[in-house]
Image 1 (spheres, protein in one colour):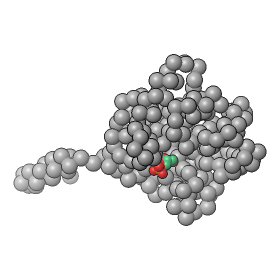
Image 2 (image 1 turned 60 degrees about the horizontal axis):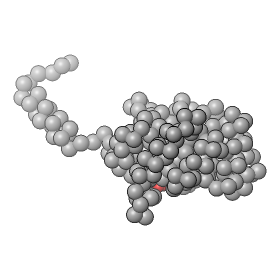
Image 3 (image 1 turned 60 degrees about the vertical axis):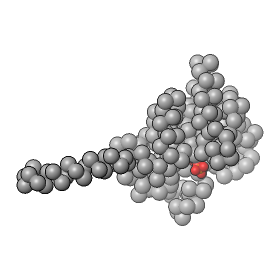
Image 4 (image 1 turned 120 degrees about the vertical axis):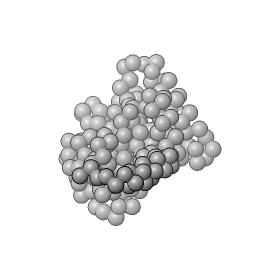
Length: 218
Ligand code: G3P
């Protein structure tokens, strides 16, 4: 499973690149607002840091303007993926961009029916929001299982399942167990994945014992 980081914070992105665990980046208008930076500028910087796909979302609600925005965003770098909302206009823009060879990420997916439509429209990625479904008392990961099962029936479907709105390590582990193609993970969740109390405790006791030997490797 590929790991994308869900942020527009370039300092965080740099650290995950250095760890060698990052395959791509996703952003959305809320994350751009949180960064406090100019959209086009921050996307260009992210694309220079990461070789893999970088999702940049259109902000128009009608197809013609979405396509104009997509043109601007695509010019930033070769690895820009155009993120489109799962609406009628978004699906129309998806089909046009896919036919033109532009990679797309159809976002704000909350049902299997929507995921099927995105695949029909030729989306490169479908982004089901598991955390937001959990928030309203539904089983977010259940949706991933449904989409996986549905897409599996049709080998011609090339749309990749990008698990979004992940909130904790179990979402990531379950996504991998289900065979999702990608999980996009907020930096705080990525850090939580690294941590385990037994790792900290074990390291502490190794260090204490090592000190007792009075030795040094260097
Ligand atoms: O980038 C889309 C998605 O990952 C947003 O997540 O935490 O705002 O529901 P969240």
